[in-house]
Image (cartoon, rainbow, N blue to C red):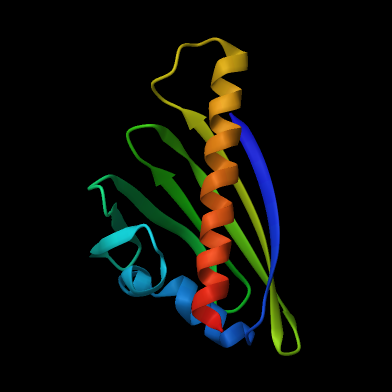
Length: 136
């Protein structure tokens, strides 16, 4: 299992950032890699990329404008994302913590941890950048 943290300052009020983050059905409008979101129920949804790749998110905790936490799983990884929001006046600080375990790689710890870290760095950077672009 690999854990990765990313902080990002979003130039938007915390209420707008929370709205974008918590309304998963709106992800296709602002996440550049998302084609569609299918809601299973109020606590679970599947995000499909433009390549047809799917990731299931199961929300395990949320407090409006405070934090959002979900288990995530796709064919490559299984793990958890935790996003803590902090208001800084007209800006919002995101503190994203994610941990994943690769599902398909060999059990060699070095190769597996490199894949997990690379996956997390790419996913969290793109998520934060897309959120920043949508919020302004």
